[in-house]
Amino acid sequence: MEEGLLALADDLSGAVETAACLRPLGRATTVELARVEASHAHNAQSVVVVDLDARALPAAEAARVAGAALRDAHERPVFLKIDSQLRGNVAAVLGAAADRPLVVAPALPALDRTAVGGVAHLRGVPLHRSGAWQVEDTSPPRSIAEALAPLPCRSIPLPIVRSAALRAALAECAAAGEVAVCDGETDADLDAVVTAAPDRARLAGSGGLAAALGRAARRSAVEAPPPPTGNPVLIVVGTAAPEAAEQLNVAELRGTHVVTCRPADLLGRGTSESALSRALGALERGPTALSIDAAEPVPPERSRDLVRGLASTAAGVVGRHPGPVDLVLTGGETARLVLDALGVRALVPVGEIHHGAVRSRTPLGASVVTRPGSFGGRDSLVRIVEHLRPAGIERLTK
Image (cartoon, rainbow, N blue to C red; front, side, top):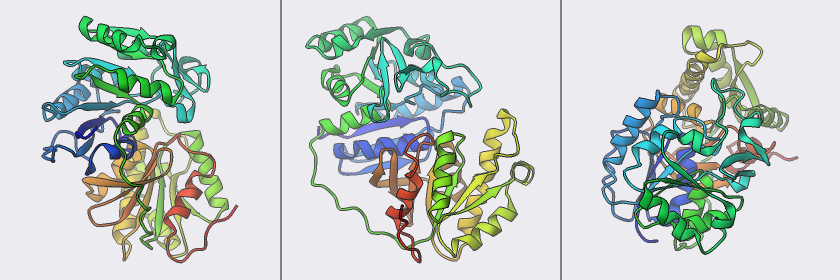
């Protein structure tokens, strides 16, 4: 595949993950941190991924933002990155793209997130019976079609996905004006969906389907990883995912300095000056992480305000440090708010450290690693710090 592509993602970590997967499709791959301002005036072989920042928006606003971004698509192929756990405004965003045939395949085999019988599963457990939505303020959908309602859907079961009948089944859905919802358990299943999709169809899925698109492209030569910048590293952990808390504990045991912010400071002043000062001092000694003190309960409706205060504190650390700082940002909302606070409007992905943990370059040359909150093993943050190898520290060892 030589042509370029426009991809839309509902949060920043998903946008950067998508860009890393789609790099084989175009010579130039960029992530734009804008909702509708981007012009997408790139050459025909470029890949442009737009972070709509739409996950927490009201559904009508998410649809408007997606529709505005799609006006720039013209005849370019479009990929819509949705959350593998079906969080956010999935129906609203896909509804804005439904003027063309839609093929949806949300499986993410790398993390054992599958779709079977039209139902999303996490490690073999149906999504609505798992604890994945415990920090959400709504209940998880019982099926993928329920998450896409009111769009008309037709489930494409695994036996069809794995047969020669798949192309005809997807064509029938397109002719009937139905969204094809494809089961999938493996990368091979997703590769089959990409191969069989109708020419004018828009594909929607997680990073698993984005990776399948990348695999379908003609691969260029393997690129050498970029050299370390030598900058100090600041990790910002704003996600409520339990995996992130464990990863932070492991990183602290391996030498990362952890600075916690009191929720009362973040909500009351918008910035924790105490944490900012402590983080600046810790950066002189080695990699440093900013996180929110979990001992103080916060109402769910204040969670975005809390993360916004954390982002403001992180931006203050970067702004007051005498030199450039590399960032590690966990969770799409956290990443977007930190980069917004710093005035960063675009990222260029340069490599993947592990699945979903993507290293990018800012226009000023600093490194930014973004990663969804629930991704990675216990040593994820340790591996990222080792990859960046900030100046003045020894390699972290197990």
